[in-house]
Amino acid sequence: MNLKATPDFRPALLTSLKGYNLDTFKKDLIAGIVVGIVALPLAVAFGIASGVSPTIGLITAIIGGFLVSAFGGNTVQIGGPTGAFIVIVFNIIQLYGLTGLAMATFMAGCLLVIMGLFRLGTVIKFIPYPIVVGFTAGIALTIFSTQMPDFLGLKIEGQVPADFIGKWGIYFTHISSITPLTAIIGIASLLIIILTPKISKKLPGALTAIIIITALVWVLKEYCGLSGIQTIGDRFGNMSTDIPAPHSIGINMESIRLLLPSAFTIAMLGAIESLLSATVADGVTGARTNTNTELIGQGIANITVPLFGGIPVTGAIARTMTNITNGGRTPIAGLIHAIVLLIIFLFAMPLINLVPMACLAAVLIVVSYNMSGWRTIAGMAGNPKGDLSVLIITFLLTVIFDLTIAIEIGMLLAVLLFLRRVTENTTVREYGQQLDATDGTDLDTHEVLKLQDGVSVYEIDGPFFFGAATKFDEAVRLAPHQKPIVRIIRMRKVPFIDSTGIHNLQLLIEASHREGIQIVLSGVQPNVRQALDKSHIISLLPPANICDHISKAVIVANHLAEEHKNEA
Image (cartoon, helix red, strand yellow):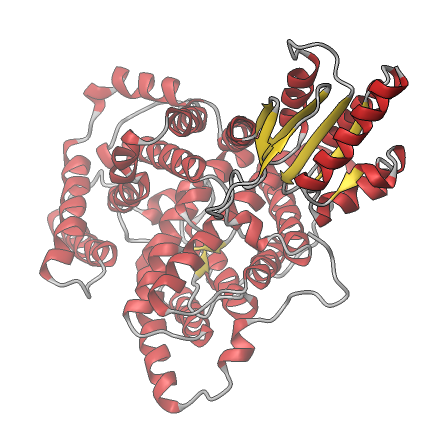
């Protein structure tokens, strides 16, 4: 984790252009057009569900998608607004308004660029899986919950509570206000989305449902005098087809202090989802994502999008897979997808105004179902209880409270769980009057070493960090036998030592010297030796008391014990 003179920034677009030909362009063109069509209803739906207009959802998909493909580190990644951000964006707008959202998104973009510059791409990929599954499932349930009024046509006066329990309480008290026609439209849309892939996997279910249902509702309104089915145009009015001019974001220290937790959540969620999408894509295409470049590309997109009023951007797994299955293999397909959306935005917005809200709700219900990962959760039932606890707690925190708290506490729980496991795996063993120098190796021979009276050997097996350091300290101080003359500390299996381990080792050496006990170190690995040198621990011991093998350490210790007896 060091910032080198040359940043690890190599956009996949530049490397993909080498050897680019007409045949590849044809494949990218087809894939880009298909993905652009698939992305249209999702961009509109995610924009509305996030608390902004469908125009903002499309602008985000156009600008963000273009920049992710232009500057990202994956050849087939498709960027844009995603379902994962709906909850956090909605909450930020409720608390801080659109201005606060723009600031938080801009700050998140800066954080993503910093992560990429500090080469944290590889680290982010190792976020514990139970956390990812837990908050993704929590987001899915929250998205599902927010769509009930539009899907069923519930007539609810006033604002629906933001919290999950309060929201469902309102739904149940207003269950009698369901609009039958709206519910029929919602259910019909849902069935079309589900059944379309069974007819043809090449047809996008969401777009098919929107076209069929929108046409049906328009006919019913125009020729049958039907009313009461709310459309996008009814809720948002006639929307502009002009790309907003970029505007400044007035960030100051007070806004940074206030919005940093939200910005951190957006950055972490964006990093996790984009790298997860890239990893899935790599598994299909056989390519290899430059994770640091991908983070920088995502950061550039999130720095730019709020200047035009957009919402957070990240890699979208479903759209990326659509790109791959339709032949896309270079970022050109992603650029074309953004251009297709731009053309639709400029020339087809009046048609988007006709889309029923119940149909969009059905689209998001299917999105939430696909996000839920219930099969994954069921498959994890046999996993260790600690992992399941982290998953369940992260899920509940996401649903009951919010995503910011869920990620923070989920990460903390995962770290504590990891530390407990590492501590449990680090053992401290004390040897008696003799030990086998080849114990724990692949050698078939045995080299039994006899220890003089007054010589004790403690072997540390595993990382010597703060949890294990305490265990070692207790093992030495609570030893039942009489005070030894020499203590051998065998460190052949210590891969690293942290500041707490160094501090405890220093205290042990100093305390032993005060008690007249000699310390001999055995088998110290080079990186551990370097850490001990830098902290001046080595200077506390005579050079002869630092041995590279246990057989030498036993000879030194036996000799010191013999000298002590002779002097006595």
